[in-house]
Image (cartoon, rainbow, N blue to C red; front, side, top):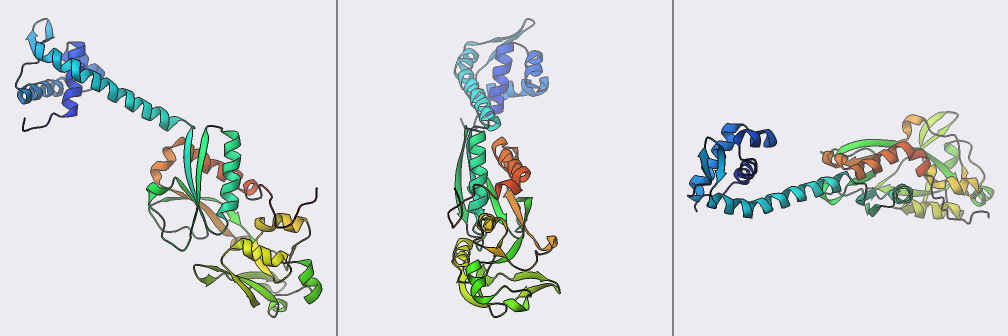
Length: 313
């Protein structure tokens, strides 16, 4: 045979053979009678056999047609079963979701979200990884959802905003006892600070006092690439840190860090995004994760409550 058999022709043949009529086969398959008739003729020409006896009583399978139906019918049924299984798997909430988190504080957000979802939906499982924000976005096939902090990257992915994160300068009471409490942006200029670098560039301190909002200068004592390290130095009383409010919620509640100056304007808060391929949102598991993050963002970013200092029992 120099020409390959087309699956559609086999499918049309099975419908016709099982119903014994082009009209009834067309009602099941949705194909016009002319298309079905053409498929049968094409198969007969390709195989060089007669598949049906054509008479006023309808279409009757020949021996060749019956042999073809016996062998292709089982394959056709298996394909339909496989397709149905794929649809059931797609519509199920059971299975794995692969989530990436940008390096800033993706661990806190993803850890809280997956823990919450795992408790609510026992059939879900998760694969989580941290994503270096100074590298290009990975290909869509490598993750189901990426949690990204900052300006949403320009890409072919869908970007859905989860919420905002506010920042503020924080210091330990130990440091303030030694150096005094700053009352203005200028007071911080000579104080030791912790420089956080994102993509090799120092993150600016947007500080607010009675004279308005300005970028604050400080004496760089430590330079870090991780917020946990910045919080460690700040809690230890060695320097002032500029940190996300949610990230030091428990240290502030316990009195181990004190917020400085006034809170920055709402417009200066940094956005957090869920990024995913457009086709991923049709997956119910991915949709559940993203919707849960959107609806519970403010609660999730403060959970589970671990801190650098022991909480009171």
